Amino acid sequence: MKKILISIAAVSALSAAAVPAIASAQSVNDRQAMLDRRIDIGVRNGSLSRGEAYRLRAELRDTERLERQYRRGGLSGWERADLDRRFDRISAQIRYERHDRDYGYGYGDRDHRGPNRW
Image (cartoon, one colour):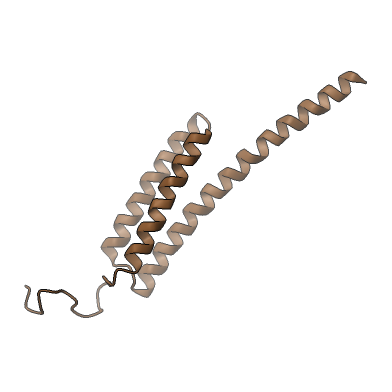
């Protein structure tokens, strides 16, 4: 009876440890997809210029590359926190760029130097 209880406890401990790892992997992927969607929406509605979107996507790709490197050895708590900080920074950059009134092509001349700048 004692062996059965020990084996049940061991199996439940292993499964409990695996669930947060799966949940954290899903939330990282969801967060990446959400940030990419926000960039797409910004380009479509004109609140992000193509150059801004290109820079934001490059930052997102760099973070995805870093995530793949972290996952090779298993994602530790520090690495997860680092990814979260990087995603927070990208999210703040998207928010700033979408509201900086620097619209994409086709929205008229907003350069402070005047219409004859070329």
